[in-house]
Amino acid sequence: MALPPLHLEPKVHPPRGGRAAVAPTHRPVSVNVEADRLETEVSRRISPSSEMEARVARVRTELVDRVRTAADTRSSPLVRALVAGSAARGTYLSDRLDIDLFLLFPPDLPKDRLREEGLALGRAVLTQTETRYAEHPYLRGQFEGFSVDAVPGFAITDPSHPLSPVDRTPFHQEYLVARETPELVAQVRLAKQFFRSLGVYGSESRTEGFSGYLVELLVLRFGSLQGLLGAARAWRLPVRIETADRDPPRLPADVALILADPVDPHRNVATALSQRNLALLVLGAGAYLDHPTERWFEVRPVPPLAREEAIALVRERGTHVLVVSLPRPDLVDDTLYPQVRKAERALAEEVGRSGFEVIGSSSSVEPERVVVALEVGHAHRPAVRVQPGPPAGLDRVGQFLEKWTAPDAPVLQGPYVRPDGSLGVDTRRSDREVETVLRSALPRLSLGRDLTPPDPERVTVRALTAESDTPALSDALRELLDRRLPWLRSK
Image (cartoon, rainbow, N blue to C red):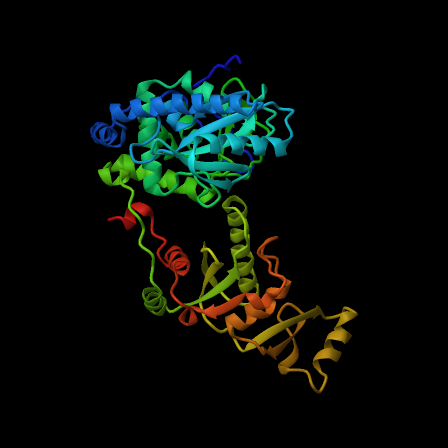
């Protein structure tokens, strides 16, 4: 396949509908001497040794040879086997390497047969295998001490018409290998480590961050980590980056970042990226360039927030936290996490509509349940509720007055005329506690196709003080009550 040329002089399109379209005007040159010195030291630390690089290269060759032998043995219709991704391009980090082995079959092979043949070949060359599922099934196993994902796909000839989610991978591989120099590979490693320290590296649904391919394209576009961060610190969301020889891709404008795939201009490489994570990069880019330290390249686990500590924080804040627990459906993460976020939004919106001030929400997942935590200003809403009525003079006025002047009407005051000329009446709320209000609303809420249980009794809604301490609850509480910027948390 002929490789399309890469143009490093992107257009700058004017803002459309209030959205900023940002792109660099030239390949930047590093001028931050302090950052240069720091990055040189970090690069030595995170780069694989020459011995490891040689071992990975040998394993790549052996994997492909073993697969070909296994395919011949079972007369498999395998077209091509290749190792792609960071292991093939050398852009992996010394402490983080998973090898991606792609098994490509004829485009006319039925998908059931593709799955059968791909998993069979994977089992023939890998040990300790387990079948996993993302957008399609694949096999994870061990080979020569490395973790390997054996992923079946189709050997297509046009990357703009893939038949499975991984079919563009060989084109990505060829595109980057033809353009990445050893200097750029070192910059890619630095960028990956920087993104890891921010917690925004990884495009899976759980993270909603930057994929490895996206990071490599951005470094290739801007020339270095500092070049990328220098451009990113001035970005305004959403960001659209376009190349000089193409019109803007026909892609949704309400995403965080739009960068057309160079092998398929109508695909946005950054579809999985959330606005929150792009905003973290924008803020972190400026903060690092202003004060570069090694902390920006250190990945520190964030400790969970224990229930008792969270209760003390809530007491100090003068707020109230309730916890919704739902049974976890048997879904792969890429399907589960979008539904979890939908459920979180639906629950928070319902609480807000019911007269409570929602300060924040968070969610987490454990093997048996999904946890959603909500922080509200007060545990109880006011006893009095103003029931608005129609403006004076409308036919419906009679119905409103008849309803609210009945002997059994729960009226505290009124009916009366409000300042805007409409009728109103003060009524007494029967349910005031937030847990009770939300619990009664559950049967009519849509929490996601697989998260909305047929039996609402399987969902619990309790105050934080009534919950047991679990890892999922601790993770949700940390996200809810400790929302500092990552680089401030590490100080």
